Image (cartoon, rainbow over all chains, first blue to last red; front, top):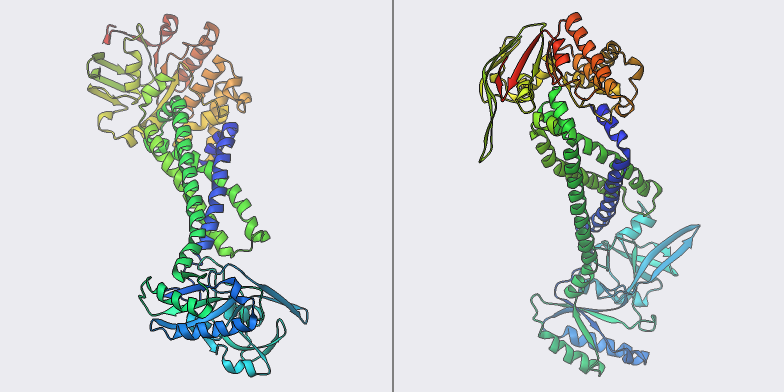
Length: 389
Length: 221
């Protein structure tokens, strides 16, 4: 029967090729969107490596950094004053690589022909506590490191696994922006939030004179601190810096903003895709309906020659499914180039899942669109169909 | 072979009731070539459709080959049509997208006959109507007479006991009509196939064993 249907399809290859093209394009669009969605959602379950609840980011006035010596004192006093507040658990200063800060610094170092790269976060000795980092091995920076002969650094697990797989790197000296000692290893740290891929990150200790950026403060508050507490913190900042010009944002709010930047295009793309699928479904439905009406005589003839009602509906469903299968086969050929040629460096499983998902959705749409017209075709009275033709 | 008792067929809509056949009694013997004549709309095709299990009677009984068809479900009806009956239509009803061989194979496809045997039997059927050399052609490449010969090959490929022909020469000129009629007569004689033919052409009807005339749904001869 399949060979018989393929002959019918081949004979109508002109009109069928347009239908196949429509199905193929829908498959490819669905594949693209589902890959994007699967890629993003695959990261949702992994921990980001820090906490966002009851944590506030404080942005200070640029002007107060002009005098570096004075600024060091200001920061020290500000931290002390903030920590003395009853609702403040801890506070930390960081210049780059703080959660949802936006600015990134990527470094790479070639040693013995091997290139090691990582994002750098410059933060002080209280950052691990204030951000709620999970220290897997070793420790965070401390005051003793300032007096030590080595320059300390903390690396995330991804950095160790990528550049030193299977090695115990704790307390090892490595060449990365100068000679540095790995004093601790933390869990993966995705400071861009849940939709950021895990990547190598290293933490360097903060020094006022080091960086070009204006440092920020991360404040860890006791649970359920009201928003009105901002006023109390503001008074402390104004008193310590002598400036009313500062900004304060709950980290949870920054997280939502950052995630929205991925959710919104994802929902938009899914909506467009759903609209496309509905259009394809309506198109297929119309084409099938038209074909069945055009082929009433054939239906009557087949019934006269011994086809049962089920044979008729099966024939029309199979015909459109075969067309769909041809389109999907071509689509899979193109889709498979992504993992095979590594056009975009994504996990192969994401590509395969996207192919499977797109295949099932397209076949589902085709089947749904074919069921009703095919069942109506089966109900056509053979004597009437033969007479009408 | 075919026994029809007190057969009536009434078409009903919400407002109109039309009697297509009224109390028809007819027996067709095995190997008989029967023709049915009558003016347009007298119920000839309806009677043929009921004999071909393509339509159901409103009243009365139909027995074919000793089996009452009133108790058949739709699956058994389809199987019965496939195994016992062959159809020939005035407008040939060939599928334009299939070549001649594939058109002839159709009944065997529904009889679930294997590919090789299907091909062999279809070639034989086409040979018997003199069209083996045209089996790769498509219907659009054939004349009307050739198309009707293909339809005959399709009707006989499953070796049915009965052939029901609805004005098989109606769309053909007299030469081609005679050619088709000769094939049907040969089938009836050589293969002892029972044939019921609806026709408007008295000369064609005259070549058959028996003539039944209908008028306004009633049998008058």
